[in-house]
Length: 252
Image 1 (cartoon, one colour):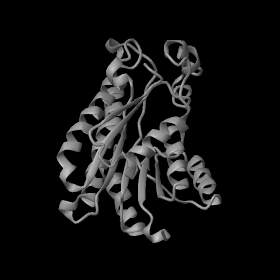
Image 2 (cartoon, rainbow, N blue to C red; image 1 turned 180 degrees about the vertical axis):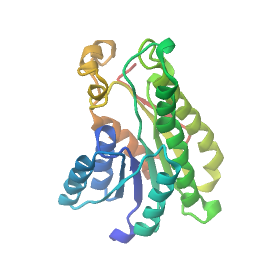
Image 3 (cartoon, rainbow, N blue to C red; image 1 turned 90 degrees about the vertical axis):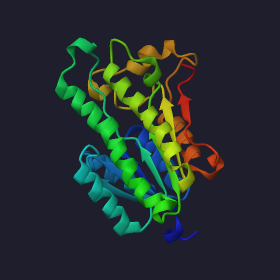
Image 4 (cartoon, rainbow, N blue to C red; image 1 turned 30 degrees about the vertical axis):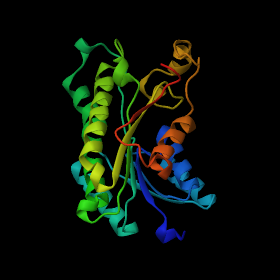
């Protein structure tokens, strides 16, 4: 397969944590990876360099998925650079410090839902426009990153985050049925406690280690373990899988 023939996959929030692990794994499998990130130029640049040093193909593009204009510009740039899109990983997401529902502000709720829900819808819509056979596309796959929190609720901590991920579950099921005849598969991975920077960045360092005892497997996941599930759902090995919500939560 030549570079021009290689499948192109967009990974939102692709510069750090789970997104970075997904980007590395897909690039290692011969896919051209577009890494969408919001602010961390250094992390995005370092990841591109690391992928390219191993012979992979990666392009980092800065965009806020909560901005319709940014999302349009992001996909326009992919059109210009590669002329094709074969997969989307809706990974970009935010969480706020733990708080009870009665303390949540409108500002916090708007940001959580703008990034986690609206951003995923906007990116999915753009991807469908390019991949749907009904629109002249060659088909493709979308993997949404949800969370075990979507079914557990995260009481006393992140009910808003959990609710936003429950919306992602519904997006996954509804969109999968909507585009199944158009060559597009849509699935979600629901991680449990995962060893990334997201908790430390929100004032809860060591949260995964503290709560590992509540997981039947007694540990948190590595980002690579989540990335393996994402890569499988994007692959031809999952060719008859759509509308699935795959829990990768150590038994929670």
